[in-house]
Length: 95
Image (cartoon, rainbow, N blue to C red; front, side, top):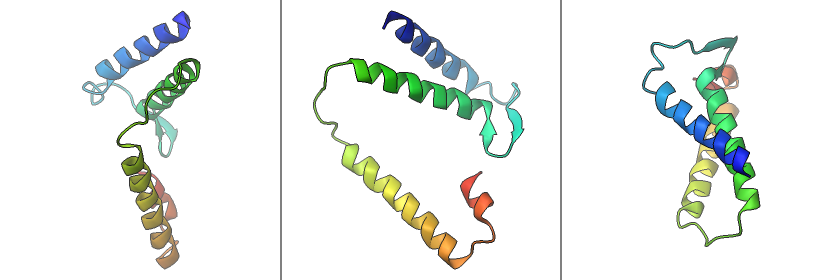
């Protein structure tokens, strides 16, 4: 548990340093839609998820329903766009 918290703190500090200085640091990894900030974010999400598995359950989060509705609308909009024109699917998925 202690080691996971240490990794999480290191990743949070890396994000704090990386995001403002992203213009000056290398970001492209050669795969479309995959860059260094995305990998840092995925690692951060993984460690937060692992940490929350070990903690006791807490109260319900007040914005959980709002976030779920937001992402459902994003998916709905993506699917509606794909039904009308599938030729630009990769441009819709990646910035």
